[in-house]
Image (cartoon, rainbow, N blue to C red; front, side, top):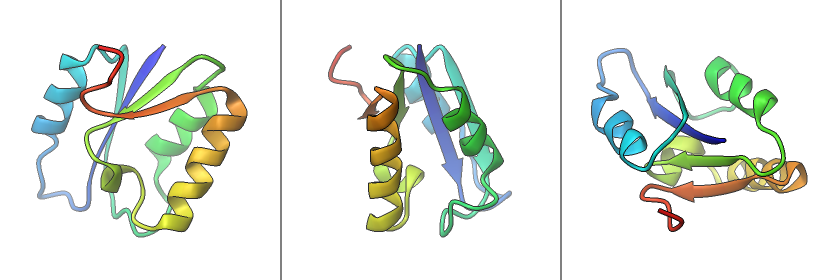
Length: 96
């Protein structure tokens, strides 16, 4: 399954461009949220996404900063995805 994740930092910002790109690369499911990325805590849609991803699944984001705002958080996310047997791509996915 190919999952997309779109995030903006505040309610007043628009997710349309991210969602369009994720649809263009064929994401089966797209999770969206409007919440600060300074911490992984409180990002309910991202937490749900990570719970549901299984071996062979792919996570696609339009830019790495939509996923993580620090190298430490990015390392932790990549580590968790790798342990699950999942792949991470930025859009467009090189497999498309």
